Image (cartoon, rainbow, N blue to C red; front, side):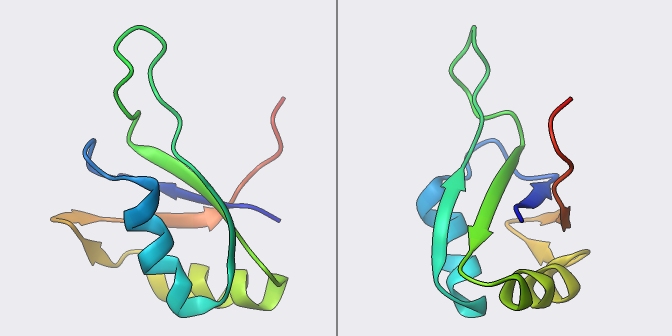
Length: 81
């Protein structure tokens, strides 16, 4: 499973997200998509943790949490269409 993390400030980095999500288990991957034209982060990211239980715990705890002046939207990522 992958976790969708939305409503992020544009200055967020993979290291920032790795730091926050490491409280919930070993982080396998962090991906912060960037805009093709500007190279600027798009305001959301995807995080994968080592176990589904860790990911579920992170989603339940962090969804709606205040971080970097924004209210995070954290949910299970949907498959790409």
